[in-house]
Length: 169
Image 1 (cartoon, rainbow, N blue to C red):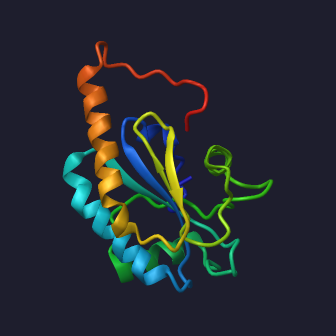
Image 2: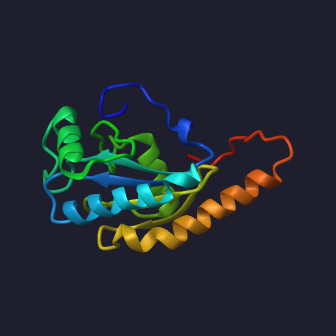
């Protein structure tokens, strides 16, 4: 479900590189991370192969207490967010969204704070994860390398079809 309560399948993002992030409006990392995430989306938008996927979460310090509408308004008014935002979710524990359970399982680490970031390749496979201490701007090169691999894979594809194998998001 996206932040406007529309049903959205993550399958929509297959074929693209995604930086999956749990976001919060009232965290010490909020300002820097939102600005950096918007900048990454802007810098890589022309590739047509990249998305930041933001998942609000209130599990850490109760720093995302608002409704989806309040979160959306905050992100757009303060940061002019241009990337997809999803409905508030749990990112760890038994009630975690399936996509986050997959990322936690594949990385071997559950988020322990806001702004945990996972880079997912065009096939839905985890590339790497980082905690909130990693500035998203510093991820530009690894994201660009992952996009280049996606472009190479697309140009080498003989039938243009992508299959979904086990262990993919």
